[in-house]
Amino acid sequence: MKNNPSKEEVEDAIAKYNSSKDAYQALGINKRKFYRLVKRYEIEDVYKRSGDIEVIDHIIKFNHEHPTAGEVLLISYLKTKGIKIRRDRLRRLVRENDINYEERKKFHSGKIVRREYFSYGGNVMI
Image 1: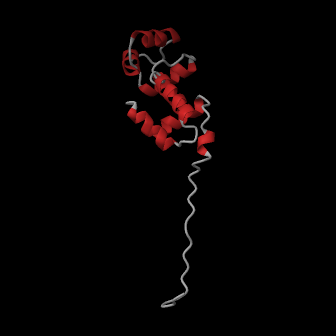
Image 2 (image 1 turned 180 degrees about the horizontal axis):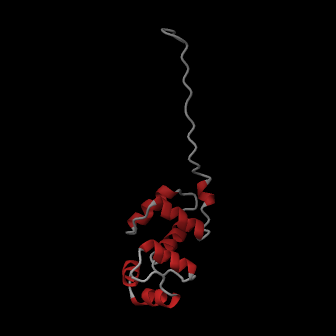
Image 3 (image 1 turned 180 degrees about the vertical axis):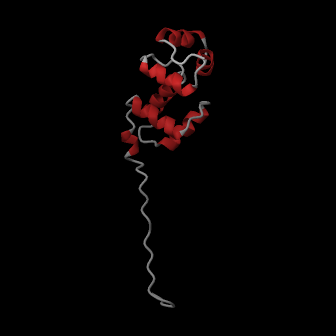
């Protein structure tokens, strides 16, 4: 088991294997150390964002067709396209790619206004 694989070894493992799991197992290190080395050696991580490009294209298309729709509708739209996505991943993609999401968000702020109920006493009729 190697303690610190070199930059070349990490790059070779990334090029050779189709998944990060296979790469870090071949290097004999755990997942956390693998990604720490990828960050330290400033290697572009090809595994982490492989499916995001297709999702971003769908988000941009949906944003043009429905500029005021919220994220619930967007997640439903992506499900119809066969893409199952969690809300936190969707928010990260939108934030990282600077998609005009704030315009939609202001229409659906999530602020709930509750009714106010008053009690005038026991058997009081108004």
